Amino acid sequence: MPYTRILVHVVWATKVRKKLLTTKNRHRLFVHIRDYSSSKDIHLLEINGFTDHVHCLISVSPNQNIASIVQLLKGESSFWANKHLEFPEKFSWQNDYFAVSVSQSHEAVVRNYIRNQEFHHSKKSFEEEYQAFIAKYGFSE
Image (cartoon, rainbow, N blue to C red):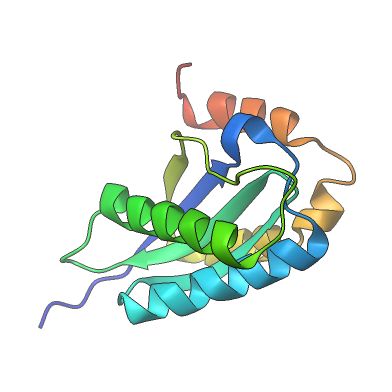
């Protein structure tokens, strides 16, 4: 059995970044995503977000890839959300996502960042966070 520890910080947004994730909906949706992850052997270490996006810290197993994990989580969770939560319109996720590796030495920092999304976004919008990610990780739009 291989021993691996590959940590990935993944972020994705609601379709056109609509602020559909109320506190109540967010909590229920994130609990569901955590439960669903477990049922699919996806090692979701941390999940949180704000009104228009979600952050996850995932430990990727040797037989998994990031694209498949994100597709599973986004697809199933939007289906579940439309069936079990109340929204003023149909809920869906944006196609894009960020995924960056996290070193063991920064795991606690990333976990803390994910846990404190409400506080973080009282000072910085998701658009500002998005632009900072683009710059920090050298992504091109």
